[in-house]
Image (cartoon, rainbow, N blue to C red; front, side, top):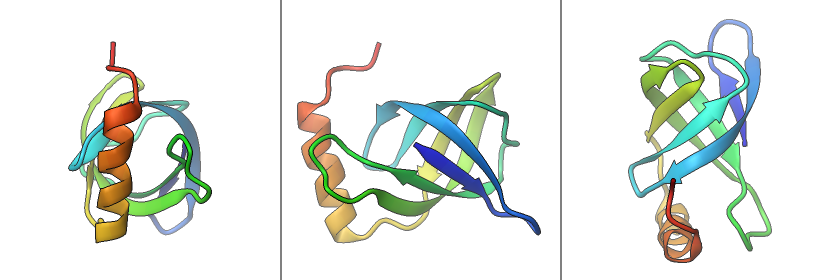
Length: 92
């Protein structure tokens, strides 16, 4: 997972997705983002050929754990997420 912070100057973070749903995802990042920041998420779902890229807003943060709400979600992306939800193991 790759996250680009959308400020005057681009800043990017690497992370690992822990939870995925139709409305957003939870991730552990190698940095901290403030709640309310808008970012671009790049991540690849299992079995997908191309990474998904979408805008999201940081809705919560606890240390390096972050929750993102998707702002732009195309129908094709929603379909991929729904299929991935059925095949991914449950979150711990």
